[in-house]
Length: 441
Image (cartoon, rainbow, N blue to C red):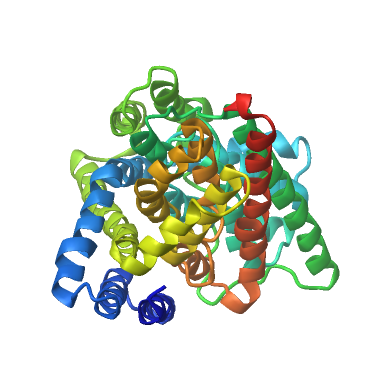
Protein backbone atom coordinates (compact mmCIF):
# COMPACT_ATOMS: atom_id res chain seq x y z
CA UNK A 1 0.00 0.00 0.00
CA UNK A 2 1.16 3.57 -0.74
CA UNK A 3 2.54 4.66 2.65
CA UNK A 4 2.82 8.34 1.69
CA UNK A 5 -0.71 8.30 0.37
CA UNK A 6 -2.02 6.67 3.54
CA UNK A 7 -0.21 9.25 5.69
CA UNK A 8 -1.74 11.98 3.53
CA UNK A 9 -5.28 10.62 4.02
CA UNK A 10 -4.84 10.30 7.78
CA UNK A 11 -3.24 13.76 8.06
CA UNK A 12 -6.03 15.31 5.99
CA UNK A 13 -8.67 13.65 8.16
CA UNK A 14 -7.00 14.94 11.33
CA UNK A 15 -6.79 18.44 9.82
CA UNK A 16 -10.45 18.30 8.83
CA UNK A 17 -11.44 17.35 12.38
CA UNK A 18 -9.22 19.97 14.04
CA UNK A 19 -10.25 22.84 11.76
CA UNK A 20 -13.93 22.03 12.08
CA UNK A 21 -13.58 21.81 15.87
CA UNK A 22 -11.83 25.20 15.86
CA UNK A 23 -14.76 26.77 14.04
CA UNK A 24 -13.54 26.76 10.43
CA UNK A 25 -16.55 26.10 8.20
CA UNK A 26 -16.55 22.58 6.81
CA UNK A 27 -16.89 23.87 3.23
CA UNK A 28 -13.44 25.44 3.67
CA UNK A 29 -11.82 22.74 5.83
CA UNK A 30 -13.22 20.00 3.56
CA UNK A 31 -11.63 21.60 0.49
CA UNK A 32 -8.24 22.01 2.20
CA UNK A 33 -8.29 18.41 3.43
CA UNK A 34 -9.27 17.17 -0.04
CA UNK A 35 -6.35 19.01 -1.65
CA UNK A 36 -3.91 17.45 0.84
CA UNK A 37 -5.24 13.99 -0.04
CA UNK A 38 -4.98 14.75 -3.76
CA UNK A 39 -1.40 16.05 -3.57
CA UNK A 40 -0.11 13.28 -1.30
CA UNK A 41 -1.68 10.65 -3.57
CA UNK A 42 -0.38 12.07 -6.87
CA UNK A 43 -3.79 13.17 -8.12
CA UNK A 44 -2.70 16.79 -8.40
CA UNK A 45 -4.21 19.73 -6.55
CA UNK A 46 -6.22 21.08 -9.49
CA UNK A 47 -7.60 17.71 -10.58
CA UNK A 48 -8.24 16.66 -7.00
CA UNK A 49 -10.29 19.78 -6.32
CA UNK A 50 -12.08 20.37 -9.62
CA UNK A 51 -12.49 16.85 -10.95
CA UNK A 52 -13.08 14.80 -7.82
CA UNK A 53 -13.97 17.11 -4.91
CA UNK A 54 -16.47 19.32 -6.73
CA UNK A 55 -17.89 16.35 -8.62
CA UNK A 56 -18.43 14.54 -5.32
CA UNK A 57 -20.16 17.58 -3.89
CA UNK A 58 -22.32 17.87 -6.99
CA UNK A 59 -23.37 14.24 -6.86
CA UNK A 60 -24.37 14.57 -3.21
CA UNK A 61 -26.37 17.73 -3.88
CA UNK A 62 -28.15 16.08 -6.82
CA UNK A 63 -29.19 13.12 -4.68
CA UNK A 64 -30.06 14.92 -1.45
CA UNK A 65 -30.83 18.59 -2.06
CA UNK A 66 -34.58 18.01 -2.21
CA UNK A 67 -34.64 16.45 1.26
CA UNK A 68 -32.55 19.24 2.79
CA UNK A 69 -34.38 22.16 1.20
CA UNK A 70 -37.97 20.90 1.51
CA UNK A 71 -37.38 19.28 4.90
CA UNK A 72 -35.99 22.61 6.08
CA UNK A 73 -39.01 24.52 4.79
CA UNK A 74 -41.41 22.09 6.45
CA UNK A 75 -39.51 22.45 9.71
CA UNK A 76 -39.60 26.23 9.48
CA UNK A 77 -43.39 26.17 9.02
CA UNK A 78 -43.81 23.89 12.01
CA UNK A 79 -41.62 26.06 14.17
CA UNK A 80 -43.11 29.44 13.20
CA UNK A 81 -46.75 28.27 13.28
CA UNK A 82 -46.45 26.62 16.69
CA UNK A 83 -47.39 23.22 15.24
CA UNK A 84 -44.18 21.63 16.58
CA UNK A 85 -44.94 23.03 20.03
CA UNK A 86 -48.49 21.74 19.78
CA UNK A 87 -47.31 18.18 19.11
CA UNK A 88 -44.77 18.35 21.94
CA UNK A 89 -47.36 19.68 24.40
CA UNK A 90 -49.92 17.04 23.42
CA UNK A 91 -47.28 14.33 23.87
CA UNK A 92 -46.43 15.86 27.24
CA UNK A 93 -50.07 15.77 28.38
CA UNK A 94 -50.37 12.16 27.22
CA UNK A 95 -47.41 10.99 29.27
CA UNK A 96 -47.98 13.21 32.30
CA UNK A 97 -51.53 12.09 32.95
CA UNK A 98 -52.76 14.01 35.99
CA UNK A 99 -49.29 14.85 37.26
CA UNK A 100 -48.48 18.55 37.28
CA UNK A 101 -44.73 18.00 37.04
CA UNK A 102 -43.04 15.64 34.61
CA UNK A 103 -40.71 12.98 36.02
CA UNK A 104 -37.28 12.36 34.54
CA UNK A 105 -38.47 9.35 32.55
CA UNK A 106 -41.60 11.18 31.39
CA UNK A 107 -39.50 14.08 30.10
CA UNK A 108 -37.23 11.76 28.14
CA UNK A 109 -40.20 9.84 26.69
CA UNK A 110 -41.95 13.06 25.63
CA UNK A 111 -38.86 14.25 23.74
CA UNK A 112 -38.30 10.87 22.10
CA UNK A 113 -41.91 10.45 20.98
CA UNK A 114 -42.25 14.03 19.68
CA UNK A 115 -38.90 13.83 17.89
CA UNK A 116 -39.65 10.48 16.27
CA UNK A 117 -43.09 11.63 15.09
CA UNK A 118 -41.68 14.74 13.45
CA UNK A 119 -38.71 12.86 11.96
CA UNK A 120 -41.04 10.33 10.37
CA UNK A 121 -43.09 13.22 9.04
CA UNK A 122 -40.15 14.42 6.94
CA UNK A 123 -38.70 17.28 8.97
CA UNK A 124 -34.91 17.22 8.61
CA UNK A 125 -33.01 16.00 11.68
CA UNK A 126 -30.81 19.12 11.64
CA UNK A 127 -33.91 21.33 11.47
CA UNK A 128 -35.54 19.38 14.29
CA UNK A 129 -32.57 20.11 16.48
CA UNK A 130 -33.36 23.82 16.26
CA UNK A 131 -37.12 23.25 16.52
CA UNK A 132 -37.10 20.92 19.52
CA UNK A 133 -34.14 22.15 21.61
CA UNK A 134 -36.10 25.01 23.27
CA UNK A 135 -38.90 22.58 24.17
CA UNK A 136 -36.36 20.02 25.37
CA UNK A 137 -34.78 22.58 27.70
CA UNK A 138 -38.18 23.67 28.99
CA UNK A 139 -39.14 20.10 29.92
CA UNK A 140 -35.73 19.36 31.40
CA UNK A 141 -35.93 22.43 33.62
CA UNK A 142 -39.26 21.22 34.99
CA UNK A 143 -37.89 17.79 35.88
CA UNK A 144 -34.51 19.23 36.98
CA UNK A 145 -32.41 17.25 34.48
CA UNK A 146 -29.04 19.05 34.11
CA UNK A 147 -28.83 21.33 31.09
CA UNK A 148 -25.65 19.69 29.79
CA UNK A 149 -27.59 16.48 29.09
CA UNK A 150 -29.81 18.23 26.52
CA UNK A 151 -27.67 17.44 23.43
CA UNK A 152 -27.54 13.76 24.42
CA UNK A 153 -31.28 13.52 25.03
CA UNK A 154 -32.29 15.26 21.81
CA UNK A 155 -29.66 13.73 19.51
CA UNK A 156 -30.27 10.35 21.14
CA UNK A 157 -33.71 10.51 19.55
CA UNK A 158 -33.44 12.38 16.26
CA UNK A 159 -29.93 11.21 15.28
CA UNK A 160 -30.39 7.46 15.80
CA UNK A 161 -33.43 5.24 15.10
CA UNK A 162 -35.43 8.11 13.60
CA UNK A 163 -32.89 8.24 10.76
CA UNK A 164 -32.31 4.57 10.08
CA UNK A 165 -35.58 2.72 10.70
CA UNK A 166 -37.70 1.44 7.79
CA UNK A 167 -40.09 3.99 6.32
CA UNK A 168 -38.16 7.02 7.57
CA UNK A 169 -37.98 9.80 4.96
CA UNK A 170 -34.62 10.93 6.35
CA UNK A 171 -31.54 10.71 4.11
CA UNK A 172 -29.99 7.70 5.84
CA UNK A 173 -33.02 5.62 4.81
CA UNK A 174 -34.06 7.32 1.58
CA UNK A 175 -30.64 7.78 -0.10
CA UNK A 176 -29.83 4.04 -0.43
CA UNK A 177 -32.99 3.64 -2.53
CA UNK A 178 -31.41 5.62 -5.38
CA UNK A 179 -28.15 3.67 -5.28
CA UNK A 180 -29.55 0.18 -4.73
CA UNK A 181 -33.02 0.27 -6.32
CA UNK A 182 -34.62 -0.71 -3.03
CA UNK A 183 -37.73 0.55 -1.19
CA UNK A 184 -38.04 2.56 2.02
CA UNK A 185 -39.25 -0.51 3.95
CA UNK A 186 -36.30 -2.69 2.91
CA UNK A 187 -35.49 -5.35 5.53
CA UNK A 188 -38.30 -4.00 7.68
CA UNK A 189 -38.35 -6.52 10.53
CA UNK A 190 -34.61 -6.37 11.35
CA UNK A 191 -34.77 -2.58 10.89
CA UNK A 192 -37.57 -2.09 13.39
CA UNK A 193 -35.91 -4.46 15.85
CA UNK A 194 -32.66 -2.50 15.55
CA UNK A 195 -34.52 0.77 16.03
CA UNK A 196 -36.25 -0.62 19.12
CA UNK A 197 -32.90 -1.74 20.53
CA UNK A 198 -31.25 1.66 20.21
CA UNK A 199 -34.29 3.52 21.56
CA UNK A 200 -34.56 1.26 24.61
CA UNK A 201 -30.82 1.51 25.25
CA UNK A 202 -30.87 5.30 24.94
CA UNK A 203 -33.94 5.86 27.10
CA UNK A 204 -32.67 3.47 29.78
CA UNK A 205 -29.21 5.02 29.83
CA UNK A 206 -30.44 8.62 29.85
CA UNK A 207 -32.99 7.92 32.59
CA UNK A 208 -30.35 6.25 34.78
CA UNK A 209 -27.77 8.99 34.12
CA UNK A 210 -30.19 11.85 34.78
CA UNK A 211 -31.36 10.34 38.06
CA UNK A 212 -27.75 9.79 39.13
CA UNK A 213 -26.82 13.39 38.31
CA UNK A 214 -29.82 14.78 40.19
CA UNK A 215 -29.02 12.57 43.20
CA UNK A 216 -25.55 14.17 43.26
CA UNK A 217 -27.14 17.63 43.34
CA UNK A 218 -26.40 18.40 39.71
CA UNK A 219 -29.66 19.89 38.50
CA UNK A 220 -30.85 22.25 35.77
CA UNK A 221 -29.25 25.69 35.97
CA UNK A 222 -30.28 28.64 33.81
CA UNK A 223 -27.62 29.87 31.42
CA UNK A 224 -26.72 33.59 31.32
CA UNK A 225 -29.28 35.47 29.24
CA UNK A 226 -32.02 32.83 29.56
CA UNK A 227 -35.52 34.25 29.39
CA UNK A 228 -38.74 32.93 30.83
CA UNK A 229 -40.70 30.88 28.32
CA UNK A 230 -43.56 32.85 26.85
CA UNK A 231 -46.66 30.68 27.05
CA UNK A 232 -49.15 33.43 26.31
CA UNK A 233 -49.43 32.43 22.68
CA UNK A 234 -50.02 28.75 23.38
CA UNK A 235 -53.78 29.09 22.99
CA UNK A 236 -53.29 30.26 19.40
CA UNK A 237 -51.21 27.33 18.22
CA UNK A 238 -52.82 24.68 15.96
CA UNK A 239 -54.63 21.70 17.46
CA UNK A 240 -52.22 18.73 17.79
CA UNK A 241 -54.34 16.53 15.50
CA UNK A 242 -54.27 19.23 12.83
CA UNK A 243 -50.54 19.62 13.41
CA UNK A 244 -49.93 15.93 12.73
CA UNK A 245 -51.84 15.81 9.43
CA UNK A 246 -49.09 17.16 7.10
CA UNK A 247 -46.57 14.79 8.68
CA UNK A 248 -48.89 11.80 8.27
CA UNK A 249 -49.65 12.88 4.69
CA UNK A 250 -45.94 13.04 3.84
CA UNK A 251 -45.27 9.64 5.42
CA UNK A 252 -48.17 7.95 3.60
CA UNK A 253 -47.25 9.43 0.21
CA UNK A 254 -43.63 8.34 0.57
CA UNK A 255 -44.21 4.85 1.92
CA UNK A 256 -47.66 3.72 0.77
CA UNK A 257 -47.80 5.40 -2.66
CA UNK A 258 -44.02 5.44 -3.34
CA UNK A 259 -44.08 9.13 -4.29
CA UNK A 260 -40.61 10.65 -4.75
CA UNK A 261 -39.39 11.90 -1.36
CA UNK A 262 -39.00 15.52 -2.54
CA UNK A 263 -42.57 15.62 -3.88
CA UNK A 264 -43.88 13.91 -0.73
CA UNK A 265 -42.41 16.64 1.47
CA UNK A 266 -43.63 19.38 -0.90
CA UNK A 267 -47.14 17.93 -0.61
CA UNK A 268 -46.78 18.06 3.17
CA UNK A 269 -45.66 21.70 2.93
CA UNK A 270 -48.68 22.64 0.81
CA UNK A 271 -51.05 20.97 3.28
CA UNK A 272 -49.27 22.73 6.16
CA UNK A 273 -49.76 26.07 4.37
CA UNK A 274 -53.48 25.41 4.14
CA UNK A 275 -53.90 24.17 7.71
CA UNK A 276 -51.61 26.69 9.42
CA UNK A 277 -52.46 29.78 7.35
CA UNK A 278 -54.20 31.40 10.33
CA UNK A 279 -50.93 31.39 12.29
CA UNK A 280 -49.27 33.88 9.95
CA UNK A 281 -50.05 37.57 9.79
CA UNK A 282 -49.24 38.13 6.11
CA UNK A 283 -47.97 36.59 2.91
CA UNK A 284 -44.83 38.69 3.32
CA UNK A 285 -44.09 36.99 6.65
CA UNK A 286 -44.41 33.55 5.05
CA UNK A 287 -42.20 34.49 2.09
CA UNK A 288 -39.54 35.89 4.43
CA UNK A 289 -39.69 32.71 6.51
CA UNK A 290 -39.30 30.52 3.44
CA UNK A 291 -36.43 32.61 2.09
CA UNK A 292 -34.48 32.40 5.35
CA UNK A 293 -35.14 28.69 5.65
CA UNK A 294 -34.10 27.98 2.06
CA UNK A 295 -30.81 29.83 2.60
CA UNK A 296 -29.96 27.99 5.83
CA UNK A 297 -31.02 24.61 4.40
CA UNK A 298 -28.89 25.19 1.33
CA UNK A 299 -25.83 25.86 3.51
CA UNK A 300 -26.53 22.69 5.51
CA UNK A 301 -26.73 20.67 2.30
CA UNK A 302 -23.46 22.12 1.00
CA UNK A 303 -21.81 21.40 4.36
CA UNK A 304 -22.67 17.72 4.11
CA UNK A 305 -21.75 17.79 0.42
CA UNK A 306 -18.30 19.10 1.34
CA UNK A 307 -17.73 15.99 3.46
CA UNK A 308 -19.00 13.81 0.61
CA UNK A 309 -16.60 15.63 -1.72
CA UNK A 310 -13.71 14.85 0.62
CA UNK A 311 -14.80 11.22 0.59
CA UNK A 312 -14.86 11.29 -3.23
CA UNK A 313 -11.23 12.44 -3.38
CA UNK A 314 -10.22 9.70 -0.95
CA UNK A 315 -12.19 7.24 -3.10
CA UNK A 316 -10.26 8.33 -6.22
CA UNK A 317 -6.84 7.52 -4.73
CA UNK A 318 -4.88 4.36 -5.45
CA UNK A 319 -4.48 3.92 -1.68
CA UNK A 320 -8.21 3.64 -1.22
CA UNK A 321 -8.55 1.48 -4.33
CA UNK A 322 -6.18 -0.98 -2.67
CA UNK A 323 -8.31 -0.86 0.47
CA UNK A 324 -11.50 -1.34 -1.53
CA UNK A 325 -9.97 -4.30 -3.35
CA UNK A 326 -8.94 -5.86 -0.07
CA UNK A 327 -12.53 -5.77 1.16
CA UNK A 328 -13.49 -8.71 -1.06
CA UNK A 329 -10.57 -10.77 0.23
CA UNK A 330 -11.52 -10.41 3.90
CA UNK A 331 -12.69 -13.67 5.36
CA UNK A 332 -15.97 -13.57 7.25
CA UNK A 333 -19.71 -13.01 6.89
CA UNK A 334 -20.24 -10.59 3.94
CA UNK A 335 -22.84 -8.49 5.78
CA UNK A 336 -20.45 -7.81 8.65
CA UNK A 337 -17.74 -6.85 6.17
CA UNK A 338 -20.24 -4.41 4.61
CA UNK A 339 -21.10 -3.04 8.06
CA UNK A 340 -17.47 -2.37 9.01
CA UNK A 341 -16.65 -0.86 5.61
CA UNK A 342 -19.54 1.62 5.74
CA UNK A 343 -18.77 2.49 9.37
CA UNK A 344 -15.19 3.27 8.34
CA UNK A 345 -16.34 5.55 5.52
CA UNK A 346 -18.73 7.21 7.98
CA UNK A 347 -15.81 7.98 10.28
CA UNK A 348 -13.79 9.37 7.36
CA UNK A 349 -16.63 11.57 6.11
CA UNK A 350 -17.89 12.61 9.55
CA UNK A 351 -21.42 12.62 8.17
CA UNK A 352 -23.95 9.82 7.73
CA UNK A 353 -25.50 11.16 4.49
CA UNK A 354 -22.05 11.89 3.08
CA UNK A 355 -20.91 8.37 3.99
CA UNK A 356 -23.81 6.78 2.14
CA UNK A 357 -23.13 9.01 -0.86
CA UNK A 358 -19.49 7.88 -0.89
CA UNK A 359 -19.71 4.24 0.27
CA UNK A 360 -22.59 2.79 -1.72
CA UNK A 361 -21.35 3.83 -5.19
CA UNK A 362 -17.89 2.65 -4.13
CA UNK A 363 -18.77 -0.74 -2.65
CA UNK A 364 -22.15 -1.84 -4.00
CA UNK A 365 -20.70 -3.90 -6.87
CA UNK A 366 -18.11 -5.47 -4.55
CA UNK A 367 -20.80 -6.42 -2.06
CA UNK A 368 -23.08 -7.71 -4.81
CA UNK A 369 -20.26 -9.98 -6.01
CA UNK A 370 -19.97 -11.26 -2.45
CA UNK A 371 -23.66 -12.22 -2.54
CA UNK A 372 -24.98 -9.39 -0.37
CA UNK A 373 -28.71 -8.83 -0.83
CA UNK A 374 -29.48 -5.22 -1.84
CA UNK A 375 -32.32 -4.87 0.70
CA UNK A 376 -30.04 -6.14 3.47
CA UNK A 377 -27.29 -3.73 2.35
CA UNK A 378 -29.82 -0.86 2.37
CA UNK A 379 -30.74 -1.46 6.00
CA UNK A 380 -27.19 -2.08 7.17
CA UNK A 381 -26.02 1.08 5.39
CA UNK A 382 -28.78 3.14 7.00
CA UNK A 383 -27.79 1.93 10.48
CA UNK A 384 -24.03 2.04 9.89
CA UNK A 385 -24.32 5.68 8.81
CA UNK A 386 -25.61 6.59 12.29
CA UNK A 387 -22.60 5.21 14.18
CA UNK A 388 -19.33 7.11 13.78
CA UNK A 389 -20.86 10.27 12.34
CA UNK A 390 -21.32 12.01 15.70
CA UNK A 391 -17.78 12.18 17.02
CA UNK A 392 -16.96 15.29 19.14
CA UNK A 393 -16.15 17.34 16.02
CA UNK A 394 -19.50 16.66 14.33
CA UNK A 395 -21.04 19.94 13.18
CA UNK A 396 -24.52 18.93 14.36
CA UNK A 397 -23.25 18.11 17.83
CA UNK A 398 -21.34 21.39 18.06
CA UNK A 399 -24.49 23.27 17.02
CA UNK A 400 -26.62 21.37 19.56
CA UNK A 401 -24.17 22.21 22.32
CA UNK A 402 -24.26 25.86 21.31
CA UNK A 403 -28.06 26.03 21.29
CA UNK A 404 -28.24 24.33 24.69
CA UNK A 405 -25.49 26.63 26.03
CA UNK A 406 -23.69 23.59 27.40
CA UNK A 407 -20.00 22.78 27.65
CA UNK A 408 -18.73 20.04 25.36
CA UNK A 409 -16.68 18.49 28.17
CA UNK A 410 -19.89 17.93 30.14
CA UNK A 411 -22.28 17.01 27.34
CA UNK A 412 -20.43 14.74 24.91
CA UNK A 413 -20.37 11.57 26.99
CA UNK A 414 -24.17 11.36 26.75
CA UNK A 415 -24.09 12.02 23.01
CA UNK A 416 -21.30 9.51 22.54
CA UNK A 417 -23.09 6.69 24.37
CA UNK A 418 -26.43 7.32 22.60
CA UNK A 419 -25.29 8.09 19.07
CA UNK A 420 -22.03 6.13 18.75
CA UNK A 421 -22.01 3.22 21.21
CA UNK A 422 -25.70 2.33 21.24
CA UNK A 423 -26.13 2.85 17.50
CA UNK A 424 -23.18 0.53 16.91
CA UNK A 425 -24.83 -2.12 19.11
CA UNK A 426 -28.08 -1.74 17.16
CA UNK A 427 -26.21 -1.96 13.84
CA UNK A 428 -24.57 -5.17 15.02
CA UNK A 429 -28.00 -6.57 15.96
CA UNK A 430 -29.46 -5.72 12.53
CA UNK A 431 -26.46 -7.24 10.74
CA UNK A 432 -26.59 -10.38 12.88
CA UNK A 433 -30.31 -10.85 12.24
CA UNK A 434 -29.86 -10.48 8.49
CA UNK A 435 -26.91 -12.89 8.56
CA UNK A 436 -28.78 -15.55 10.54
CA UNK A 437 -32.13 -15.03 8.82
CA UNK A 438 -31.46 -13.82 5.25
CA UNK A 439 -35.12 -14.32 4.34
CA UNK A 440 -35.94 -11.25 6.49
CA UNK A 441 -34.40 -9.05 3.78
